[in-house]
Image (tube, rainbow, N blue to C red; front, side, top):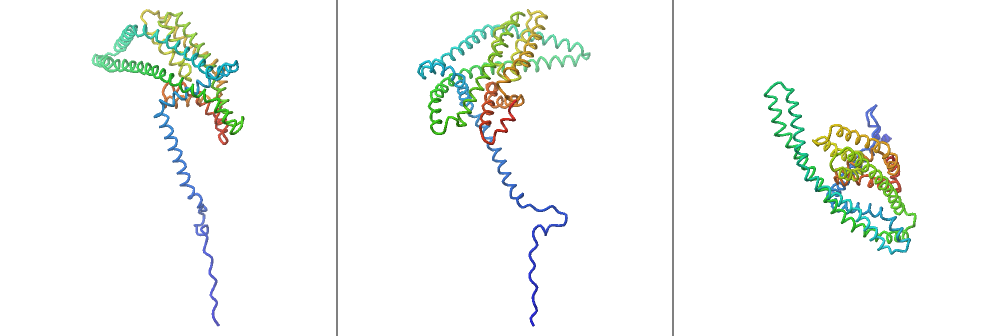
Amino acid sequence: MPTRRPAALPAPSAQARQAPGAAPHDPGALDALPWVTRRLATRLVSVTLVGFLLIYLKSILIPLVLAILLAFLLSPAIARLTSFGVPRALSIVTAQALAVVVLLGAFMSFAMTVGPLSRELPKYRDALVHEITDGVEWVSGRIKSEKAREALKAEISESVLPKAIDQGVKLTQQGLSVTTSALGYYFLTLLLSTFLLLEAAHLREKVIEAYSAEHPVLISLRDIGADVRAYVVAKSLIGLLTSACVWALLRATGVDFAFFWALIAFPLNFIPTVGAVIASLPPVLVAIIDPDLPRASMWAVVAGLVLINAIIGSVLDPRYVGQKVKLSPLVVLLSMLLWGVLWGPIGMILAVPIMVSVKVIFSHTRGLEPVAILMRG
C-alpha cells in the first residue's frame, strides 16, 4: 500500500519571518521614500530657478511690476474720465501725463537741492575729520603707553578713517545709481503701463465672455487693485505727514538743507520698519558735525526725529496703514528682506504691494486659502 506524502506547508509570510519583537515591515514606506525625495528635489530646483530668473531678469521685471502698480493706481481716474464721455485712449494719456508731472516736480526739487548740497560736502567732510581727530586724541590720552598710543593713531588715520570715507563715497554712488535707474525704470514703466491699461478692458471682456464675471482671476485683480490703492494712498499720506514734520523740525533747529532731508524721507517711508531710521541718519549726522550748529540744536534734532518716528511709526502707521495692508508684521519684515536681496532698494519699496497681491491670489486659489490666512495680520 503506497504511503501518503504529507501536504506542502504554505510559505511563511514576510511578517512571520521577522524576528520576535521586531517592528512590522511596511514595504510602502520604502517605495514612498524615493518619491518624497524626488518631489523635494523638484521643489528646491524650482525655487532656485525662480530666484535666478528674478535676479537675472530684474531689469525687465521691475519696470513690469511698477507698470502693474501704476495701472492699478490710475484705473479709478481713467474710469472717472471715461464715465464723463472722454475716450479711453485720451483718458489714459491724461492720467499718464498727470503722473509724469508729479514725478518731474519731485525730480526737479531733488536736482535743485543736490547741487548746493554737493558744494557744501567739503565743509562737512572737514568737520567730520575734525570730530574724529578730537575723538582719537581723547581716547589716546587715556592710554599711558606711548607706543600703544601712536599705534592707535596710526591705525585709525591710515586704515579706519580712509575705509569709512570710501564706504561713504560708495554709498553716495549707490544712491545716485538708484536714482538714475529709477528714472530709467519710470519711462519704461510708463510705456508698459500704457499698453496694460489699453489691453485691460479688452482682457476683462474676453475673460467674462469665456468664463463669467465672477471668475477668480477677475475677483483677484479687483481685490488686488483695491488693496494696493488703499495701501499706497495711506502710506503716501503718512509719508507726507512725516516729511512735513521732518522739514518743520530741521527748519526750526537751523539744520542745512531741511527741504532735501524731508524730500528723501517720503520715498524711504515706503520701506517698512527701517525706512524711517535710514531717512533720519543723514540729518542727525549733519547736525552732529556742523560746526555752526549749537549743541542744544543738535540734541533737539536727535530727540525730535526719535519722537516723530516713534509717534508715526508706532501709532499712526499701524493704525491706518496696517488696516489697509492686512499682513502679518513678520511677513512684511521677511518680504522686505527677501525682495531687498533680490531687487535692492526698489525691491524693499515694492515688497508690501507684492505680498499683498500674493495674499489676495492665495485667498482665491483652491488649496492655498490656509496660506492666505496665515499671512494675514
